[in-house]
Image (cartoon, rainbow, N blue to C red; front, top):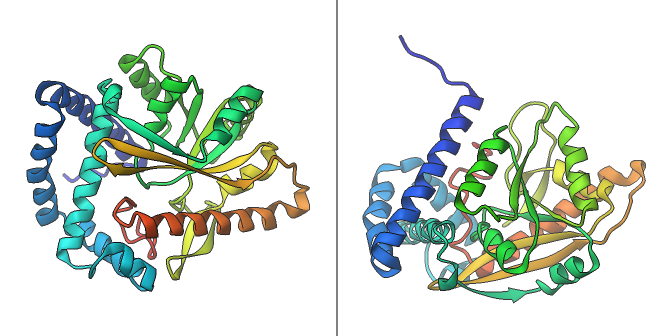
Length: 315
């Protein structure tokens, strides 16, 4: 008899698999070192390139959309062919390997440059928190590296309902970790109060805002992105209007072997918005976010890792 698996159960499996993969990758990194480890990822990349047709088609769809503009074609340096898709998948694999390196504690091997990060350090010195809107671009795990190095307290919003397990995983890797997860439950306002408390304590809250939320009751909105209209979650941008804190685009892109650069761009100042204006401001903030995300994709075309048909919203 066939058994169905609920969305929540799928989330459990994905989360457990991710944690196991991180632990395995961390052990592999410690055993063989970075140079040999990077060689070992090529067979895995080729396997998934050949076997995962859905991801392969989604990658090509993104690259084709990227190259509809002259800037996109120049950034990719060629046609969005099979070789470009393979390079895209390899870049994702390198990003995963660097996650392994980070979680294994090999932080001394990472070099991070800063572009706009002075705003974060100013907020830390003044004891103020901020809402950091990220994306599935580059390596968001570098925030954990930065939190340890600069004593930042970072809260990452998750949608799987298993924050306790994720937090236990963080603590198992580093008892002094200053990164924790916050559950988002669309049917409850508890997370909103928890996020507000984090901000008021001078902490930072990170939300990856480039994937439309699933479900009929989800609040999504459309914004221009890479030459077409795309759907994004509206809730993070609505939240920015009621938290009365600075809002920053936060990304971390790979610049070379074990070299990263943090990118922080102001999206909105601390400002309490009247209820009558919150919807309009949220949509304007979303359009600014999408424009900055697009410009980063054009500069780093192989580092956007949404391997599904983004414009068709087949998440």
